[in-house]
Length: 372
Image (cartoon, rainbow, N blue to C red; front, side):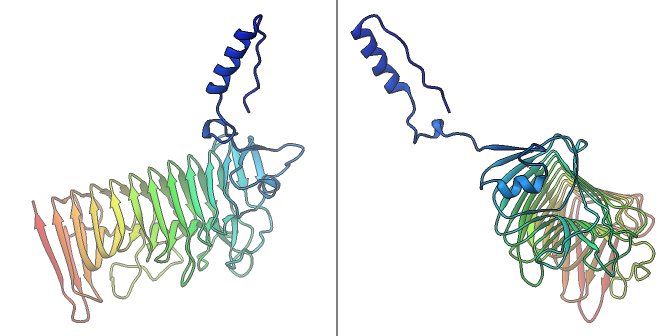
């Protein structure tokens, strides 16, 4: 709030003139320039020893500043807030020994709900969890449901896995947005590092859910099967991300190159309504695995084990994508509908298998056109 300033005047006329000028120049209490900034709650402090205590005390629109340190706690946020740490390497929200199950039946370290819009930056969310597949498994690092929106930037989400690590169903996704068959959420995730997850890096579920991923580094691990980014019925944009080390590993024995009887894991798995452009995909089983009607462009795909891209059951256009190394270039798969793929100035080099392969099943056809 601007302090009230007064001036003494020798003459009555000078004083009145000064008051008149000050009255004209001073903003009214209702004007935007006079509005006070939202309060900032500092953690830790005498009033707010934990992040959750600050969240509970805050009013919608408040800001929470979290000082350097490790905060072993679980957060539930149901109001509009801005939460800022001292840096992803300095401020960490760490999974507690015992997690409380959320409204969706999953154990998550941070949960956004109730249509809250929450900005989180300059901090880390980290596991591992202490549960197992049978009891207490860690569901997600950050969970977004109930129509909530996450704005995550300059952050880290790491070690989202159980103890011991195992392929639990719907378990240990770094960031999980929306739900199936019902439930939505949205997110903007940028300039962040998402690593060492047990399930997937980012999962976006349901037709009402949406996410934009920009300039992130998303890295799986080499002990268990993972996917980097998954959109299932959801929409969004995936741009300028580096996604690596997502593949099929023991004990997931059902993986292979047969698209009709085996499973494949991907750096980016996406469907109709997702734009995939300018990403770098390295060392995944499939670089991009696409379904429906999609366009990809200017992606760089390097040393992906099975194929740089697999395009299944729909209509696809790939423009100026570059595939180098790995088992094959582009797989075009028709298993439920006739499938067409238009490869426009797609460069495929140094692959050990065929640059372009078609897989057809059940009376459906795969058609590929190439344009230099």
